[in-house]
Image (tube, rainbow, N blue to C red; front, top):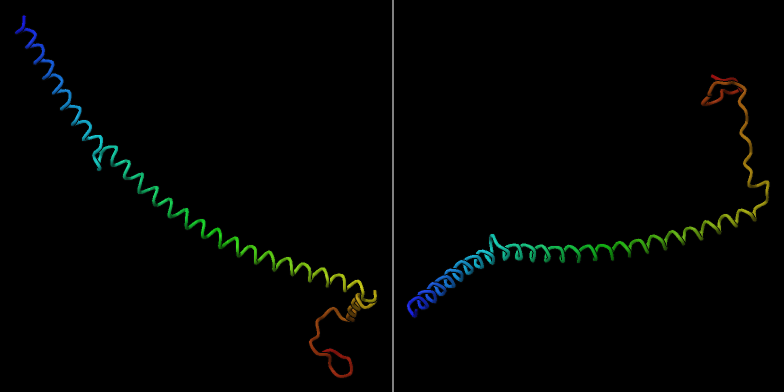
Length: 122
């Protein structure tokens, strides 16, 4: 009986050793830096670093754009105020001075660059 128990104990130990060997090989492949999860983690880490740099650049660009937009909107507001003053000053002019004189109607339907002396067209 003791021999059978020793053989079962040895078989169990060999089975556990074989299981540990297979498990260690799988774990080594799992954490391999080129093909396994370790490689995927390394690639993702590099991508996170790239995205962090890109995000920093985008934030810097956005800050610059906001500054430029603030300057442009301030100039636009100043120009709008000047236009309002100009329109208000037009209301102060006499009503006849704002209307342009009507253009004279030509006697001839033809365009004349220079009128000849005496009023005749050349």
